[in-house]
Image (cartoon, rainbow, N blue to C red; front, side):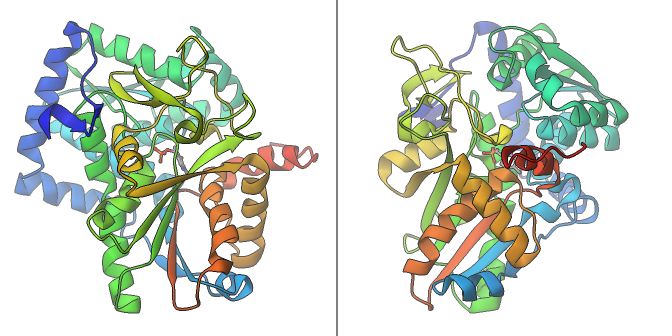
Length: 394
Ligand SMILES: *Cc1c(COP(=O)(O)O)cnc(C)c1O
């Protein structure tokens, strides 16, 4: 694969001023990913600090109730900070430290990646600055507080729609200004090479564990792995070690928002077109003039207008299938899993649960479906209550 291409996708569409930074990062990563000390230190962090391995839980009540496939939940919601994001930030902040950097910067949408980065920075004694759309800071005041509590500085971004895509652009600009002591901890499998590869490798621990756990519990691989897709990091993490196992179906669930036939959607594969943005070639939600379209989903973690280049390739080749799940379907799944298994999933993860509610009953009882529960839903309770017309005190 030449310079981070995934089929025709990926690449490095960046200004000259960033080239040295991504080359330095690629060289360091190529070295440290094989370095025994790095591997051991990251392993200790993942196990002792983040709480890995996460469980592969047999959802017996849900399986019985749906009457089809045997359903397992990969419990990334049990990780420290409550989602899969910690896998990536521990890897990247440790890498930055090895590279001699003293400062990390990150973009954040809903604040989940910002909080995870601030957490890893606190642990590893790094200065941390997070860029967040001013609009999002307003909506996610609790996460802004957490980041500051963890010692990070949070900068409001006022350009564009003052949301996630603008925060990514601003963080890239900031990185250009200060490369010598700063690493950009990118939050998903996107951006210029080598980020989609680095983030995927750090998240691939999810499918490495699913594979071993499913073999241990069932003596075989699952028939189907389902995950929600924003930028695509939890999904690629859950898919990666199954890509070369063609009997395992890989299903990515995008946020349809109010529907893929409306403008209020974030379903990139289902509604987007090929383009170049944030340093990569991939599919993006665009308007009639090829400008990046405003996107919408009830789930703040899924409303990014693009998708990682490896997913774009898996879609082109047909190896993975991408489906769109509406707000309403996700909210129903959020309530269903809470009620049925006593597990409140992140509203992002509920998009994958919604697919299972539709498909598992059509599958034979001898089939095995794994749903990646990318995070826990405490953060979403107030918004879902509001969606249902109930105003609870936040
Ligand atoms: C951020 C987030 C996502 C979306 O990001 P991906 O890179 O697509 O995984 C999904 N689930 C949760 C819980 C998140 O916090």
